[in-house]
Amino acid sequence: MAYRFLSAGLWPIANAAADYFKENWGVSSLRLEESICPDIERRPTLHALTSDGHYLCVEVSESPYPTGLDSFVLDCRDNFLPVRLFVAIPAGSKDSNYKRDLDQARIRAVGVLEISGARVQVLQNALSQSLAGVRLVGPARFPKKYRFQLSKAESTFRGGDPQKGCSLLYDEIESLSRRVAEKTYKKGYWRPSAPGARPLRIRFATHPWQKLMSKVVEGLDPQRCRFLPPDLLGRVLGITSHRNDSAHKLNSLRLVMKRDRELRTRFESATDILFDLVNASKPLRV
Image (cartoon, rainbow, N blue to C red; front, side):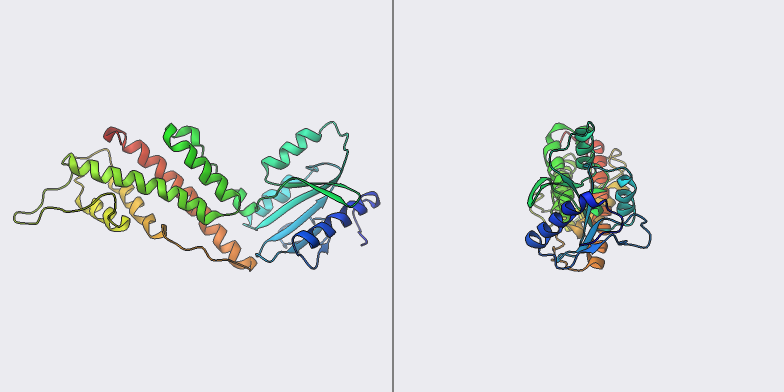
């Protein structure tokens, strides 16, 4: 293949990378040095659409993270483009900034291929930029008992399974909100039943979550339980409808962009709700 902008010395690296993705990812047609979006100026050395509705982009360089790549990464994230970006480099680099650039690629969720002849070694895989751009959870700001699951949720989301990542967060919110509901009821923080009304019979651990939270929002007396704001309980109720959303396999760029945009917002919102609920419920010691 002939390239217009790539240095001739790197043509064999680009061709080896193209062969690798054709053989291992099943991409059929790779475009050379073309823009992937009118709003993005940089043109990757190679790009193609994959069968799961993502862009595969390959930048060929002497460095694991070439100068100017930050702008391309940020443009992809700002436009919610599901781009898996790799940098293909020759093996045996003696660049003094090699380790720094490799670390930078990892931080930016950029994959790196090291190529020697026809041999291709994946030094690190690429994550979709539309998912990698999600706001960091910051597990250290949560109590220790939540940190492992939060780290797991974040790595799952960023690793390409956003539905599961959101689900792991919802699990934590559901578990905590059930404990909050039971503790507030047993402490008498709910409004008293009307005269002659049946006593509340509910299994806090198994009652459908959405219905349970509706009862909490309706029954909790804000005068008796001032530390749990009604709007926070309403936010918890608002996300219960997302809890059992099913995941469907997507195969178009448009659908992947729509899904990632929605789930990125949901993931960040769920993180905030869990943080606020953890702090608000501290007086209950749950």
